[in-house]
Length: 249
Ligand SMILES: Nc1ncnc2c1ncn2[C@@H]1O[C@H](COP(=O)(O)OP(=O)(O)OP(=O)(O)O)[C@@H](O)[C@H]1O
Image (cartoon, rainbow, N blue to C red; front, side, top):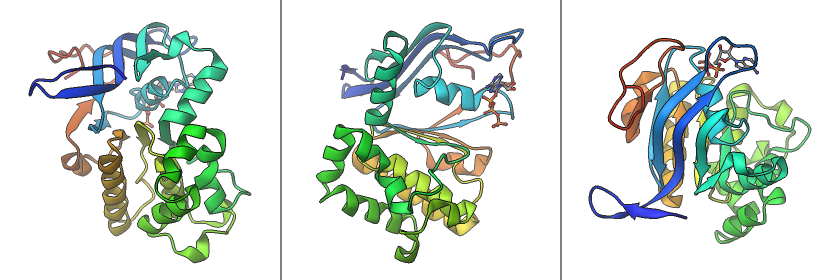
């Protein structure tokens, strides 16, 4: 993992580096994403917001190598997603990225526990990291417990849970095995205030303990204060001034 000296002369590790990124959906008149520079370092927490349809989910997909840039570079841990084959991208993603999707993407017939354990089944690295905390099963149970999901739910098929419960299962799955980057696409939209606060506590504590970088998308600006950095993605096609870092202000 590349390291450089940060402003406080402390070595910081790059998790995500974006340079001159352009991406447009096929058939669209103009690019959906146009970012000069954005860096996220280990342990950093970023709150990303912007109007509906401005490209937040698209940007998260580019960060996770689900989509590949038309131009420019998106590098995870120093590796340019575009330089990897599709199969290598899949391996790299499951090993290093925990993704909480807007629609959760749980496997409906699998139990809650088996859903959480999926990254450990597909990635030796995630399995080894989870084993450092006892075993993958121990870590899965601890994460579900931390998310406030009762043990009586753990062996139920995921589809038999409420939307808010499924959201928390998706978060536990993203966190297991300490991925370097955790991406969360509106993960609290189905939670009431108490569960939302508990959810954020667990997510932020786990990311801090593991030094995972977190990129969190939400329309709820009240949550921004809990993050180290707030970034606004402007509406598409609108000319906006940029910060020194080249990111839209
Ligand atoms: N699969 C797709 N094919 C073509 N265009 C798409 C696709 N997915 C998204 N878009 C378009 O890209 C733009 C950005 O969509 P995106 O879902 O990234 O926005 P968003 O900021 O996450 O929105 P929201 O806050 O409503 O979830 C929209 O104009 C959308 O119509």
